[in-house]
View: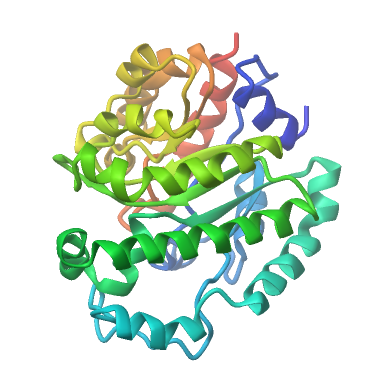
Length: 331
């Protein structure tokens, strides 16, 4: 099997020759700098790092919504707008057709590798919790559900229309293996909003866009950190088919999810905090997630980006174990 066939086989609930061997979230720059100081060749791009470690190739696209002259937030999580008038003023720098054309050019570049089966392709889209937060800022966004409900709906309606145009442009070039909505709407104690808030402000826009993606033969994922388990049923109601990265430190249990949601697609779940501890700890972690790996519809990977504290040698051990268990899971 080639890389694309393995992804598609797992997502269809069938048994591949082995599970895909991937790093779901590309490495932090500090992690790569650390490894380069310990012997890894310098200056490798993401696909070249995949090749160096013998990982399956996959290419991520994250289409831009904002024009280059869109104002930067003065600090992480700060607002760039406060009200309807600000949004009207800044809207001329959002949802640009130039950004769609830019994405199409990038997708066209990878099309030969995708068609050969050598490289799986997936794309992020900004989700309906994530996107208003990037405009309102973290604190004001949570208040905006009460202070600016009409503006919240307007933002998400505009976003849904733009995302639909993006999807149509992308699938006209190739059909990604999956599309993931960036959300980050949970942390270590669970969801940051209630089910009622989700149903009012986010679900209508997922119901508008998810069927379009699925009609194209593309799987639909959510990326949200923290303790995601209470929200899985919410996302299933609007047609979402999978979730990542399943952070262990937040209490996520991939075996429990698999038992409760046998058809849901999963990526991630390997506890990254075991990686600095050496082979025995990592093997124990693989044994923990092996039951879910054997049940299918699950691609194991680090439950977020590999942290800089993981040595080059320990990462090589991790990759060796990942390959071993990718085969063990299908036997």
